[in-house]
Length: 489
Image (cartoon, rainbow, N blue to C red; front, side, top):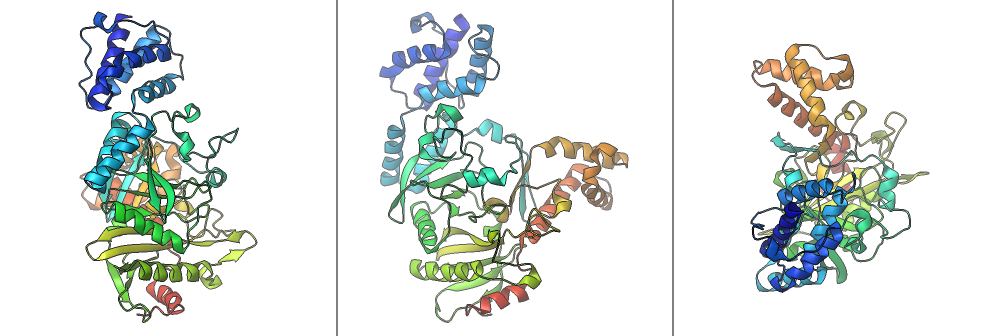
């Protein structure tokens, strides 16, 4: 037990250094950890070599689990719960985290406040930075590709509609605020902070397995379904007024083209510039009713209109005009049907950043219509690409950051070996398209780097998937739609 005592004291030391544990509470916390672990309590004077001088708790937590297994204090499958209990006990109470965040926001600015909160969520092991750092990530042809080794593929639209609710109905979904310290989902380290959007109570939390730097969600304090309306545009602008270093956006509130939690109104954002935000405008447009508003077709594989102005009211009015028109728009010749017996099919995904000139809102037009040829979605990744990406193309992918399933990390390595060997093995036959195209890239490059060829192939496929999602395949079709609401070229 001596090594276990040392680890417990080192965790207490770590919490004092990194998690703002008050030294006066060290005895209390040490006894609590012993009770959580099931180990006898002890006097810290027995352990003079405790050392919590680390940036992350990973090493200490791994050692804790190992010693608990030796002492038969934890069973197989209970390791994650044990770590969550321990780190939850060592973290500040939610009220103290919120007070610290609010003080920094008041005395400094939004960037300083979110930097502090993000750092705290890493140090208390809620944001799994060490896991995220292992995810492959690269940029190619203005697309960012990541392979998510931390989570399995998500393909169940019914779970998205229910918000991944659990038996018993508490919390109502995976993102409700009631998840703070909820053991049923190992959320004892979750910490949220309150914000106001549109005069209503919302809260912000970071994602434990974020797709990009400081990836988080703003969640409605009221458990109501996702929706996008005129107030949404005001809410998004409220957010970037508080946190101008972040972008924020809303998924389309429909299955297949929306997020994984449709049952609870929320937005996604964070501290990274995504590829869509870097893209330029290829066709400038105007609306005579709003002479000070810049409108343009974005140079992007998907269907995106950009609205720029420093007027909040003009921004909301123009964006709502586009949204309302698209929700009711049909063109059967293009496969666009706004509503049928299966319900509404058109929706928008708006996303905004704050610039020196005001607000910049990108409105992505989406449709989740299906057909006999495309049962997973006419404007979804087409079947030939499903081996790479079959999951929903939500707000983040629609902006050019593709999150691909973790299985690809190993599968594509095997395909690369087939390329260098000159033959695709039977067990990888589903990858024939990827093999053929990556092989052509590899050979055209003089067979210098098969891994680089595969990255180029993935970037190409992701770009084509974005084109699949485009409801208008050319500017002529797009302009025809916009003319109907007096936005002209």
